Length: 100
Image 1 (tube, rainbow, N blue to C red):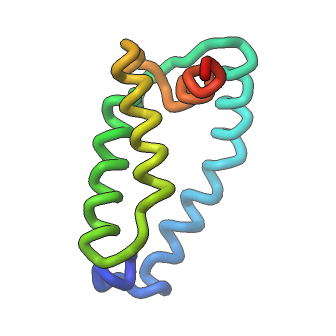
Image 2 (image 1 turned 45 degrees about the vertical axis):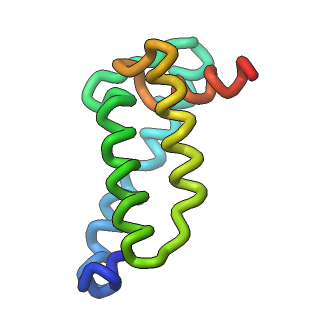
Image 3 (image 1 turned 135 degrees about the vertical axis):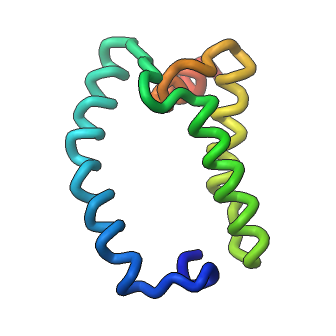
C-alpha cells in the first residue's frame, strides 16, 4: 500500500523498524492483560482503533488491494463496540471471540 501511495520501500523502512521495536513489549503487555482479564483502552480504545482500521480498508480497496482480513478484524472490533466495549483495548476482541 505504501508504494500505491507513492512511498518507497526505503522511505518506509525506518518506520517499519520502529514499529518492529515496540512490538515485543506490546505483545507481553497484551498477553498479561488477556490473562488477567483487563482490557484497558488507555491511549488507544477500540473506537479509535476501528476508525484507523476503516481507513486502512478504504485506502486498500481504493488501490485494488484485498482488505478482507482487515475488514474481518474491523467487523470484530465493531462487534465489541456494539457490546459496550468501545473504551476497552483491542485485546477485548479475544474475549468477544471466545464468547462465540
